[in-house]
Image 1 (cartoon, protein in one colour):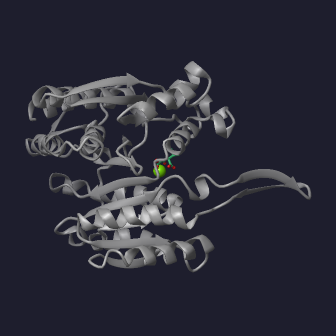
Image 2 (cartoon, rainbow, N blue to C red):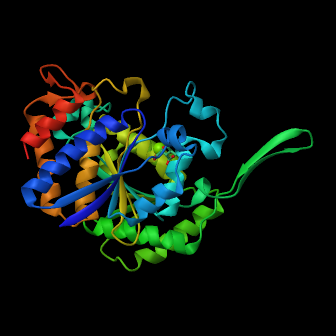
Image 3 (cartoon, rainbow, N blue to C red):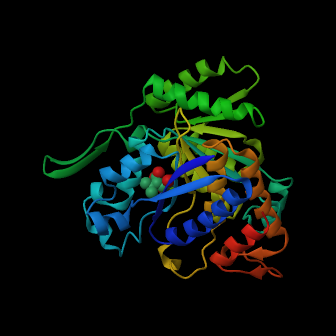
Length: 360
Ligand code: IPM
Ligand code: MG
């Protein structure tokens, strides 16, 4: 198969980790006789530096025409980088939000699970994580607080700011369906997370999710308030299969869930819409403090490339191959510094990429 991939290396460690993912994709294309071609586009801080905007219209057009988008990471140190002296709509993150909205990537999938090999990195007590956990956060990505009206203005001599949280029935329905579809392929449980004891948007969310659930009699649905969910994630992460939630709650809970696994450098994500086009990126950020040192963990990006093969290109065996190669490399004891533990062998970012290719 021929596939065109729009590649955004981005900022910080982005270029290093993306290079390793491309290394793995090239090895896969050789092994399975595919042709992957790459269009490199700019987004985030590097785009501000070159084009004066965090995402140009040309970059969006290239992404729209591609079969999938692979992204490293964007953004810099928010206290020291000059990008954060710009007005909010010109900062690196605005480019990411514009890309999500322009491509209509409404469904963000963020897996969080405990790797057997990396149990030691989990900050929770062993009795809590015994047997492991494996959840998928399904986060709505193009609505809610992130995209509602916002304004800061002076009223009666003081500054006042507001951000609107808006959801329509259709927006809730399509993400809910996605959540239930994913649950059908997993352990058939959906925990829908909202703040229905306070917010109107959450009460509508709950009503629509209940309606959608009628079409999925095999899936067990429970509703959970977001503050309780934050607590349950550390108290008993094993109870979760699919967590379905709106944009802002999903942003916060997915960081918490990844921390609970203890290995954020291992977690991938996919942002999808109705058709096959998707954007794939690691769950972690751009880590400007370690950028350019060849010590970053490329595994989350390589796993994101595997998700791309699976979800956008229907290349399941190729994706399996990558995931198994990563497990093998971990079993053999190789670790980047973020997941290093006693008795294991510490390797660089590029060496980790090489090892994964060798184990395909
Ligand atoms: C994420 C990030 C983004 C978000 C930022 C960088 C705008 O935190 O992908 O979770 O809030 O969605
Ligand atoms: Mg986030």
